[in-house]
Length: 435
Image (cartoon, rainbow, N blue to C red; front, side):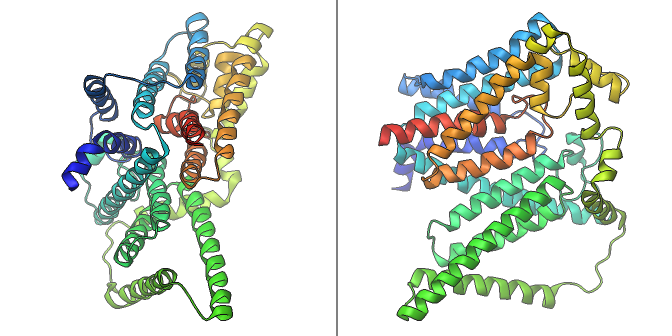
């Protein structure tokens, strides 16, 4: 029976797993491209078997957005590797989106896809978190794992398995969000306990990831979850007092969560070694200092290469633009200017896609980019009454928080493209046709 279901849902399972690769790809140093080959392979297989492709006409606005990004590059500036990378990102994710729309045609398939993806993301982030904690333990003992060096010149900090600890943290946060929605399904008691324990591992890895963005998002998520839990607890308490009845499911959830918390406290007190040997406490000191600097924004601003300095320089370049460049942009010339200013050579960028849009495509391009993002936000809010939409909306908000203060353009991140720029169109189509 399970084999039959797998064959029946093969494409749904496959496309949900490929979507999970968007998160895994930047958080684990497997050292070779996986997302693009997987997309092309499944795309070819789907055409061969199903012999049909679906494309929502409204999503063609995305191609116009990509054209607005590319046009100034050909007219005003040089095409840098960063531009080529962003363009390939934009195209490969769009191909994946076409595949997604062709496979996921109705709400039932969309619900299945969402559950599969939540499971994949949660399990993957748990495995990555466990490996990250193990790597951090070895790091404290002075042992470095060779494969980690593949992700960058400097050995990754804390629990991060890659040089970019923010991307590593994003994978963990996405796993926590998925775990929360898994718990909302009303799963059996054994699964509830397991998910809570796995979530604890993810939280620990997030704390020692060295990512400030992850610390902030983690704090906000735990605050919201705690508020929701307290609210439900108070409501259930008054319902119990008024009726002296409590549903078996709710009672089991409350009891299981209490058991998990008590077991965690007992395990820490009973089994935690009293004299953990740390040969290199400097690694802990680095994380502590980074956390302290998070609270002191003036120190961050004084860093010559900080984002604030880059934002200021971006506005400086915009102020020097001619009227022509202010309206239509100056292509990719800003990359070299930023490289000379902050690195002495090469290229760099303002770490803000909106500023990049102004520098590259002028006010016209920036207005279209902002308008497009606002329309995607509108589509999300329009369908927010559906549980699946709320999941994707939260993921999109978190992804936007990570990338809108660090990316070059809106096409620099595959995760941002798919969940923020394309998914709202799919969600709107699915619920519109269902209604």
